[in-house]
Image (cartoon, rainbow, N blue to C red; front, side, top):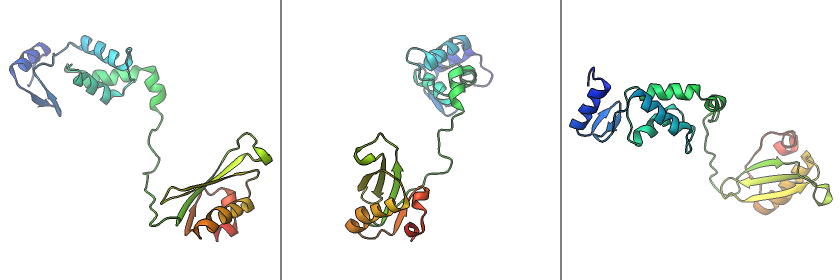
Length: 188
């Protein structure tokens, strides 16, 4: 479409069938707006009554899906989002893990357990305020027990009573390496 102006583009769209432009499929029914009208549309989509505070790429795509187009749409979306105070406040948050997530597989039941301590909670009977939780990676079976203190000895008793006596000796116990899980007896 070379050096077409906005009004020329509108005429061209009406004479053409559906066509791709910058990896987006446009149809003849999409009206070509002026930049001012386009910015108003973007503001409504971004922060109007049903606004979703969308980022630049999503904002431009929502306008396209709603049937709007103007030549500077992407640049206008970038400018609008970069001036939005709420977007700037929350955009610095990283919404993905620092490292790629990996799947942990266990070839058979009760071979691999994950353990962690949750709490402190409000006091329960016997001055117990911590919850020791173990989950089998294969079956997702949960064993849990309330504890008053979180010591290596208490963790050992829990492993013996709730895991070894019921399911046998596990090949591996995975924890967050808190000091209760780092004792010599537990490592063996």
